[in-house]
Amino acid sequence: MKSLPSLLSAALLGAALLATAPAAHAQANININVGTPAWGPPVPQGTQFYYIPEIDGYYDLYAQQYIVYRNGQWIPVGVIDGYDPRSFHPVVLDYRGREPWAYVGAHRDRYPRRVVVVQPRPIIVRPRGLPPGQAKKMYREGYREGRRDDNRDDNRGQGNGRGNGHGRGHDRD
Image (cartoon, rainbow, N blue to C red; front, side, top):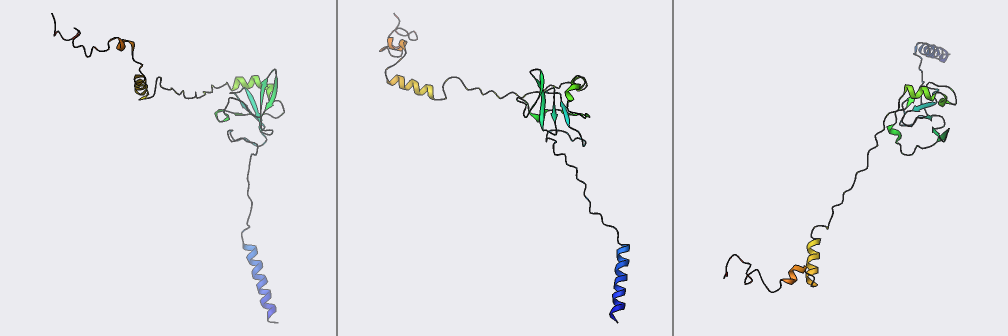
């Protein structure tokens, strides 16, 4: 019988604690846009298209493809050759539907094409002529093989201008 009052008091104390305890809310709200590319701005939920003035086309966030005008029709492509998507300035379109290109004229007027500056590749200039020391080496090899300048061969045996009348005025008659 002693256990009944202690059990009853424990139950009343537990009920009182539960009634006064604040309600715990274990709730997390995470909004992830799965289709948003890393180079694009964040978009509100339900947005499907970017307009990209640099290519005068669109990017479909759901299909993850570009839509460009080629050969008289709008076609989806996975990659735009010659462009770096990080240099794009995409505009989030508030458009619901499947054909945003129906308003391409309005998009062109509202969002003019920006000039994309393509960094030129560095030009490697190679020095002309022979590397240092090579001309001297080739001259020595030619000299050893008996190949000399034609003017030098004609003046053999005359020395340094001594005795042939081309000196500094010495030996004049």
